[in-house]
Length: 228
Ligand code: HEM
Image 1 (cartoon, rainbow, N blue to C red):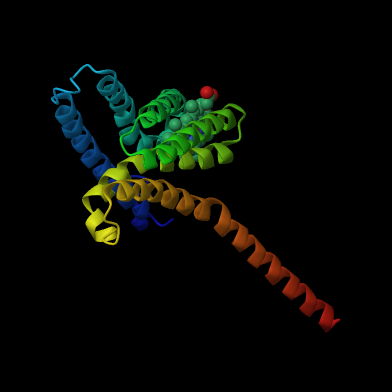
Image 2: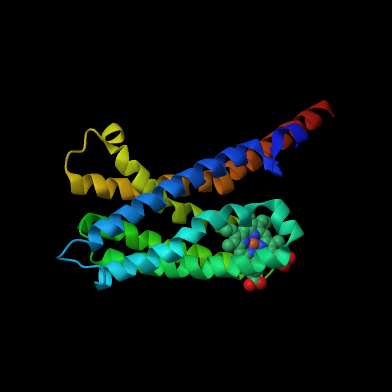
């Protein structure tokens, strides 16, 4: 890629992409802190109830993930400091798996029952993608490792989009009035849309491009045969 199209060692698109993700994460962190302070000050809940304690742990594990991800994806960082990539990666993957496991535990008694399946399925998927990424890195398949890390991060960041969509839901879902239905729809949308976008990028689009190339090759071949 031409030097003019690069910034901080990556394409401008990726700089813009990670800037949006980091700003959204910062919003998520502030909003989560406000939520925890509010919930902990509720006399029926209390600051040391098991639910609030699991939220503290979940947040303490999840927040660094949001800010470390861009570093792990940075090609210059991986190339210059492969050992740092490995060790930060090990911490990242362990924390992702623990955060996802806690998300599943929190989902078990989540107040909106319709959201429980979404949170559990995506918590399990987050664990699965992270474990696959680790397995592939250990066995030297770095292309598969990269793809599973992209899927893992897409699921992890869904928790950020859920919060952002909550503040804009009147705009997106004016036709859904029931608050529980809105929460459930929001949660499924925030997980499924990023995962589908990632699969289009990683699998569907390359498959279509391959099929297009094969079609063009067959077409060229049949023209060559006709000319003989
Ligand atoms: C958040 C994103 C990522 C995380 C958490 C992560 C995690 C890891 C871990 C844990 C290892 C070491 C495995 C082991 O030996 O135990 C590793 C190695 C490696 N990863 Fe990643 N990874 C990420 C993104 C990427 C991406 C996007 C690529 C691009 C291809 C990549 C390429 C590599 C390579 C080449 C190694 C071997 C490094 C070496 O030579 O020592 N990783 N990664």
